[in-house]
Image (tube, rainbow, N blue to C red; front, side, top):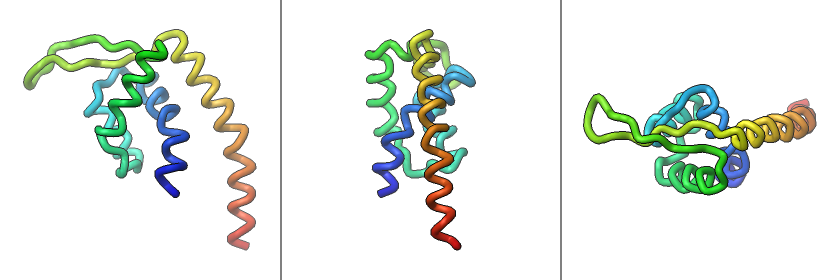
Length: 107
């Protein structure tokens, strides 16, 4: 059940993290884990990054790495900013009603 819920919001979470700073795939994975999304693997992040790039919501730029080969850092495009704003709006429209429903269960 958790993985199905997560699939629906992971793209928005990734866009939000990239909006805050340009990141490469592995660092993105670490950031998601720091926020408590421990079951999100790199293997599930890279296909999303590729899709977001094909949809022109993000763009990648190769940069030197202090330890090893160059890394591809991602940043939002203007379309990505628009998509992120739409995600925020959609999230807010369902967050409150869902929380109200869930809170009724604990009473």
